[in-house]
Length: 164
Image 1 (tube, rainbow, N blue to C red):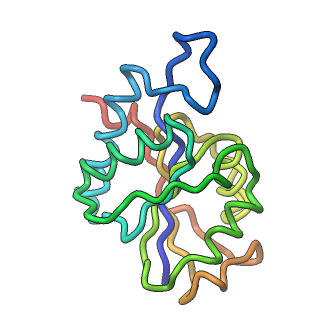
Image 2: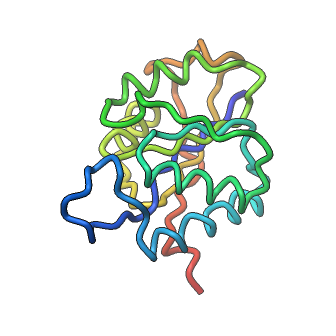
């Protein structure tokens, strides 16, 4: 069995109007939410074996904050194809992952994250910023991943659920 943790990047800043979308950083709320979600993964025993993220600054910042907070010891891998793509592209990237990675966190964008969640689970759940969907995939090899699988959505954590 493989585990997919699908995360939408944390809240980003729009304070610099001339800044390219790809270069937008996290805002204050995003900088708080990302490590909280990492702590949640550690508490749930879901520290990833591999973390992939989009090359967008906000995704990289989210992935790095989550990695540090959950105790991930590997390198966060940036993938250009996770920025402005589609669910099919996300699936293709996942299908080519090394099988030694059993639990993978993918930090991406919307609508791609919601689309992939719907493709795999049939669920039309909304993924707010910094949300994490937990899926256990009934496969032994990433190459077996397909739209035909019946994948349950085990949990969808939203940052606002973690607020005291």
